[in-house]
Image (spheres, rainbow, N blue to C red):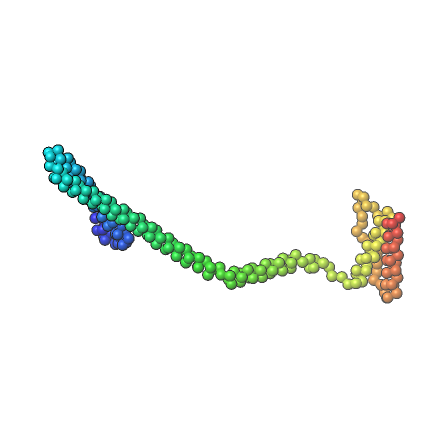
Length: 222
């Protein structure tokens, strides 16, 4: 019935499954023989008792010899059954090994695919590209955080004028002429500084600036 069902569904039992089923059927048949041999052995033993009781000693002896043959057949059949059972166990082990081998082969195929997808060469290529991308992002970050566009470009003369104004403010703060408390401080310059007419005026301004700085430093040390 199972064979017919397999034929109708399109599935075919493997040779291993068929062999295992045949071995089991053979074992069942031999176990039936063992029971028959045991029954016949018991019958011959009982016959020997009856013959010996009736005084037929030779007949009893022959019955016991037949009983011994049946007992030998029982022992041999049990040995055959043991061999068949060992064969079934070996067949199961071999089937497990086949399954394991197929699984390992699939695993090897998967591993090979992973190695191909992430080979050392490709991994190195990805890491180099990643390093380049990180460097580019760092450059972008540096460019976007650059404050040079917010700085006012000034020439040397403008820097000198600012330095002189700073010195004047520091001198006023050191002498107490400018309040540092809650009073508001005028943002207009205390003395406008005109643009020097010639080099002599510029030198005089620098000299004056140096003297102011010197006075500030002496005031801070005192």
